[in-house]
Amino acid sequence: MTTYDQHTTALANVISANGDSWRAIDSEAATRMRLQNRFETGLDIARYCADIMRKDMAAYDEDHTRYTQSLGCWHGFIGQQKMISVKRHQGTTSGTYLYLSGWMVAAMRSEFGPLPDQSMHEKTSVPALISELYTFLKQADARELNELFRNLDQARETGDADAEAHAMAAIDNFETHVVPIIADIDAGFGNEEATYLLAKEMIMAGASCLQIENQVSDAKQCGHQDGKVTVPHADFLAKINAVRYAFLELGVEDGVIVARTDSLGAGLTQKIPVSNEPGDLASQYIDFLDTEPVDIADAHDNEVLIKRNGELARPARLANGLYSFLPDTGADRVVLDCITSLQNGADLLWIETATPDLEEIAGMVNRIREEVPNAKLVYNNSPSFNWTLNFRQQVFDAWEREGKDVSEFDRDDLMSAAYDESSLAAEADDRIRSFQSDAARDAGMFHHLITLPTYHTAALSTDELSQGYFGKEGMLAYVKGVQRREIRSGLPAVKHQDMAGSNIGDDHKEYFAGEQALKAGGAKNTMNQF
Image (cartoon, rainbow, N blue to C red; front, side):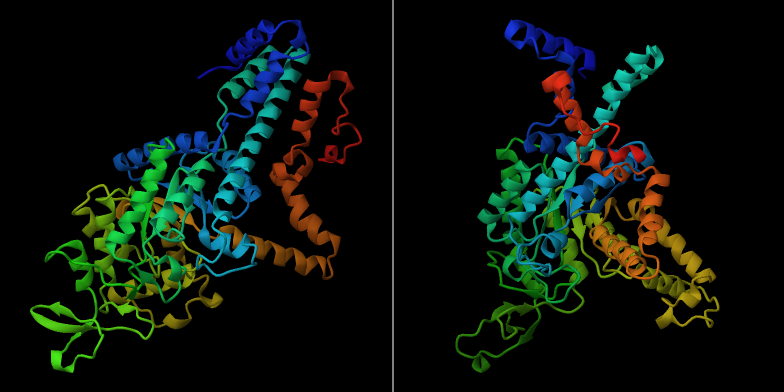
């Protein structure tokens, strides 16, 4: 690691070598600007973050308590504030990522306005958001380092050697806010070439990890909606290959691919793959199709038939041409999807489930690990789940199996606030609290994320402010509910001018213009009230 003093000495030599015409350039100021811009390109970020993820994955393999977490975000400021908060409260960004949700890009960032999660939004908005997130994270670095530089200057001005040493150590040991982003590429937004082209744009913007799902691109649905249509394995593996080639072309050799399967809730496929020999991967996919025996004499002209167990069979087919899978085969299809993906280039798995049922998930993961022992999951701790109701029902069912008296509870009405202080609710909350650590230990969950947290927090906080501000509280609703809490919690964003870069700009002006600099942070700046 190059220290602050080493950077300054090296730059002093560069300035000196350029003679008297560079006399106005200060090596220490240049050092500060260099340190505030550690990452020059998105590819620098992608390589740096890929290395972090690989080390985290290895650490998890050794110790399943070392799982990682992230929150989804739809704007650079939101991602920035998450990581600032993580550093403030946890003291480190280690084990913490950001998640870029295709759902939130569709709902919040499309030029068409709010859209459902069906890949109808502009695909260019995805790499644009990755770039935006990293721009804000780099600005968080610049702002915090700027404060450390000011602390160093103040210590020197007062002659406080201990404070100077402390400030210098803080600068030399500074931890960046730049962390990996798990970025949702949906089903690839087209064929494998389209997937490759978009993957390149996302990687060049900084993505070290791309999550791709096995749905049909032109019929893609949100993982928690009905009507999902999956593709044969060969089609999906071609897109995994496309993403890997994109990583390798751009020199991000440790890039991470998350293979997501929606098969648990998907009952349809778009096409029947070509099977070249019994038992091959295409044949295994075809085995899951729902069929009925048919005599050749009863077959219609131009209809599709398959041979199954030596007899002709008619696949169940919808009016739109889609084929149906056999009922209750979702888990088996998930297991095959996951094993196949890991054996063909994927690094991590994502199993989209209908509920956060740890027993169900662990059952599938254990089967996968019979073939791939170090299989690891990225799991969606989704706001689409009613966590309260699901876990209360899980406790209710467990107690009932154990023979406990549950007559005081209505299983269908367990969401009721009337149960909030009950022993059942307390145990359900304990299970929710430990869900991530339990799942990391028992179900191979390396990474836990919440896809849409700030969609909901923005809606809730805005509702609370609007209720009071446009009601009887007026300005007190903002002061009491927002600003006073910011001040007392020490949130940096209360100084919104500084957060937007005002102090950084002032210091740069001083580097450039010296005493002539017109700075905004003087005595009359209202930010000084905080």
